[in-house]
Length: 375
Image (tube, rainbow, N blue to C red; front, side, top):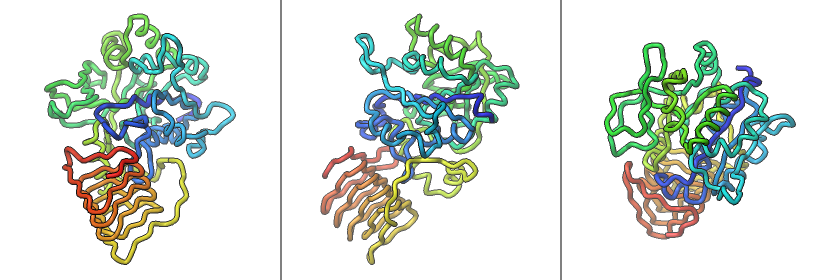
């Protein structure tokens, strides 16, 4: 893929209620994942691995940790004199309070960035759907079919009504054209599910965003795609690899635990297409004489003196002697003191579980403790 053909726009979302305490003090795109990464690392790496050198990141509210993580884009080779990485926060005015009404409103806010980008095509993506796929093949199909918009999708079985959140179900013709889009359908037999990534020409994006805004429409899928299904040629591009949609806490927990399976790791962390992230140098993990560790991720800087099973420990986490951690996620600098027991628990950064604490959740309802809590 010629990187001069495309630029990228990543919409990082808002503090999403279904993610509860995980997005309480940070953008959903900045949520830690997999021991050392953030959600945004995956789509940003996909773009860089496609040769894209001009990426705009649309942020709103609680984006300080996102700014700190991305920096100047050095880890993604985006610290450039021309193009590079651009953070696009809300432009606060009397009429704009710094919170977007939807993704179309967010795109309208950064129209100056879109207009001055010199590339012909744009890859438009969210940050809460994780996969490892450069966009070269998708762009080739987009050009070959003469599509106006090409959207990424995967084949997934229908969901139960209670599991619906940002679920976009698609019906495609034998030629691959999208003929129907359903958003959170109560019952749907469609097995094609959108992956929140699109390719289209920059000029078409400008027109669609401005046309929708004049009508008071603010949502990309509902107000642009569905509204223009007959007028535009919208095609699907199928991806058959592993997809992690992290729209709820239960989904975050399930896909995090899936990383403990080698086939999942092999697909999501494909060595041919590396996932880049901010580098944090730490000493190697320390395992005490009484440590028992089984089927777990343990990052650098961790101190393990108790029992850890089927769990993920981020940088600097500490499990004390006689403490037990099972089926849980401990983020950076989390501490589990002596005789504490955790099962199906997510500890955010710097959480402390004091002596003798006992917390038990379930795969569908893991216990989540907000950043910095002591209990």
